[in-house]
Image (cartoon, rainbow, N blue to C red; front, side, top):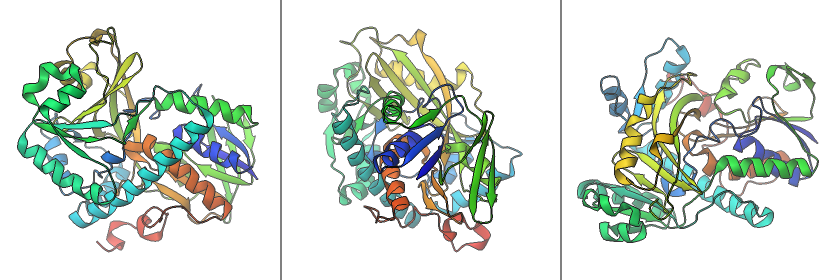
Length: 426
């Protein structure tokens, strides 16, 4: 078939690749001058099934409430006149029970593990270079109490097959000597040896080049201005450069997905959550970190990427506002500089903000709703790089009528996921 993929981030390009492997003629529409310019560029770069815990947990409501008064919270809620924020927030709060958080975390973990296996297969087949590291990710804690709690929480993923190793402060420093000066402030941590990292934008652009080499079309600098629906089918997509027709359409627009979907009478429970990131040059590899780490106390992720590091932190409920100022990055920069004081050119840090497409249950939306030739592959939230590859393969399988390799309960766009809180069972 002729398949039109709406969106050229990591989700859209991996979808194009998997559909092309199935023999379809693929075209990708991307409004930016090149693919992977948004959330696919400004993420932590972690392929982290070991970090599959959902944000919609019993602790989240208190954190969001505190953020109205204390600005140093990892999750920040910004009051807005946008009614979509409050309807989405009610759905989010409904997911913050212990039972729902456990269920959603396990679903998310299983998709993440499957997705990592798909990524590894693609890398073996295509030999893509993207600053990959595969020595695991270290999640460290600053107090014994926090470490014990973290280990207890990780038991949920361990029971689901996640490999973990508890490490003390000395082993952390042995594995990452750049943390030597910070040893006194680290109680211990959890190493997930099968987690890995890599530059999502570099991977996505290399994969897009492969798709083009094999006959696919990547139409960048092309803005979608309209989409037409007749009865239960999409008839065309209109761009600022003309109309594009296809047999099948796949929506991979991330945080922009609900805006386009509303034009055809489809409401998607997705809201943008602003994330902040720093990309900082390494000036001395001997002193710089080699192992990706997450400071669980401050919720700051630090990932080595070749000749630079990527630092991410903070999630803000701020609508579609991408503006930022240096003070927004001061805390994450200070934490990173205290951990790794040497070898990094902190005065040359590049600041970015991106919009993460979050669903209330933190699970992506994969499959078809009530439009026969429109498939959904969106809502991947804060670990889209982790879940993109498996999601793309699942959507390709669904389009082909094949059985999915994992159970899709909770991931398909069912009526229960789309129901308003007042109409749904708690």
